[in-house]
Image 1 (cartoon, protein in one colour):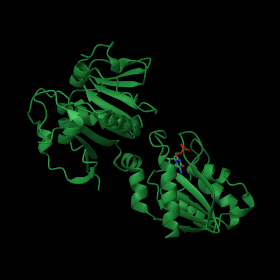
Image 2: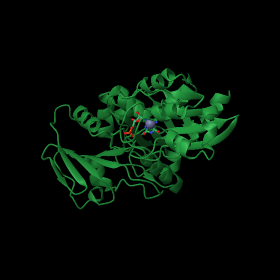
Image 3: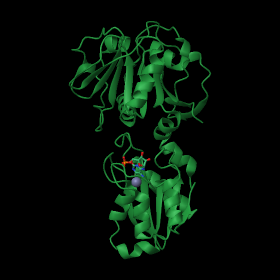
Image 4: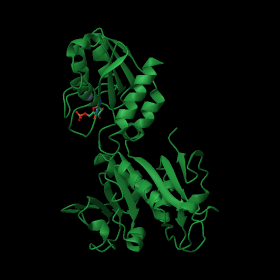
Length: 341
Ligand code: AOF
Ligand code: ZN
């Protein structure tokens, strides 16, 4: 029970950096001496200290460390990456015990961190609140295990489940919903739309309703029909344009030439190569349908009508009839469906 309590705190700390750590995972760590927390830390940003190191640095009286337990939501790393291995640091400092939430499936770690610590004679417990710790890093784990980004499909629909016949979007009327959508965007590494949505809505796909980073923008525009003075081409974030015409880099914009055949699969493969851990697909219907047909999705988020106004029309695109399993209802406004359990 004590262990679960402290791992819960690790998760809470880790979540503070949601959206900021890509391509790294969210990790939190707590150091406990005689049932008292004497240090806490989390991973803020790729390239910066890992959670364990921030927790260690926050301990005022370092002489307590050999009598302390370090809790960490993800297995301590075993490799020299952007920073030295945390498992070695834990070993050198001689912690009494290490408690791990989930093991790290990243090729470079994968049990090696735990082994280093155990071989040094330090007691290790792992798998504490494992499910919650895996869920915390569903994007990171999906990326390393499935060798592709975690894919979220998002759309709006009215109460009777129908969408506008011209595939026009529902106008989001409520500013809270808008903020929520921006938070969703901020949580994901990238956001993707197709030509039709870019032309019709001219979105800038940024997170201007909240303070946060902007996700990488991805545009599918096979014949490069979207004019470069459209908002998606502005300087507010970087943009990847998947097309069949050219490959080039122009400032913040990267054009990626891709063959038409199996376009979606090729795009996803490229995102894996570019180390994009997650992507939220914001339409339109044709693009969403292509991802569903290819079986390439992990979660769907549906915004219901009472938080939205419908512009016109009532024809349902096919993807609305997919037998999604409903897992969660949130505020009677969003349904979240999961494909990864
Ligand atoms: C983190 N933060 O708190 C922990 C991580 O490139 P590096 O050196 O930052 O290493 C990143 C890898 O380290 C990451 O993919 C994961 O496997 C492991 N653990 N990473 O970013 C942390 N504990
Ligand atoms: Zn580390």
